[in-house]
Length: 346
Image (tube, rainbow, N blue to C red; front, top):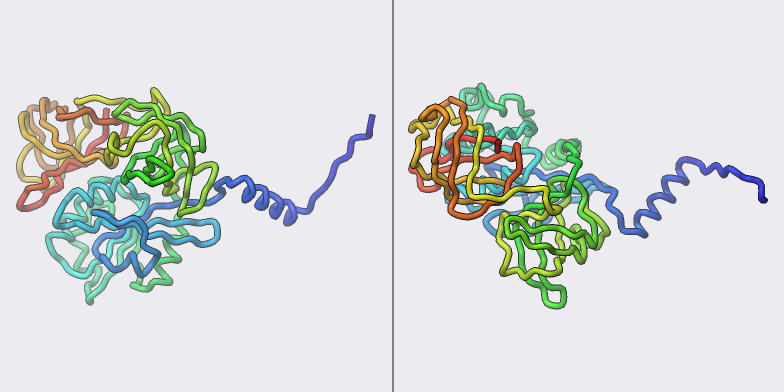
């Protein structure tokens, strides 16, 4: 028998050794956050490097072990869908105010309805806090920090933000998908919860098809896993890109629900003029899904502006959801305010 021995390694050396091992094994030891940019279509390119571009545009920046992805609703305000997608992706909102108009008012209503608690406001074109006060008073934006329009200051603020780490079964809404020659089906998405690992067996909801994660990429580098908040590219086995759609979700089997009825605890915006009632058709933004739905039941017969109540929607297709998911209710073809309200899945 050899005598037991305890080896003491100085803390700095231990940290260095851990980092070397982590790099060798390709584990993610980074912090991730997703930041929404509203009101300025040039801010993203000034802050970070452009990534994926469609009706939403992503910009990425890394500082040490902190990676931030900025999301811009590029086709908004022409289309309301990009606003819904952006709200569903982010942890933090940057609202730049250069003009007081109906787009600003609608954006404020949407951010408040969706409950984005963390954010900041930047003023431009000589707009002042006093001018904006009537618009944000009584909303979640009333608590947002006002910061100067300076790139160094903005980066300092967003890198200082620490999003909540959500534990549990991995959940990845798909926002883009395509075939890559020599690789196969690839999806892009944000890890909303848990950790996705290479070789994971997951279900694609609502298609209910099992797939295997062949590889994990984060900002064009291969890793063995991606943690909550990471923007990942996943190569998938056993499915073709044509079988996917934006809004489909990757998660372990049995962890999510699918169906064509949604029951929501819904708060209608106080600015919404028409009461919600049976047989009305609206659109719902749920994760990266966006779909029409008909009201088949309202708890009180109808729901008026500023009220909260249970509303049941019937969809024209199977959708994926789980309890407490946020759902924003929209009317894309509306001439005025297009944001009716927001609710949680019951």
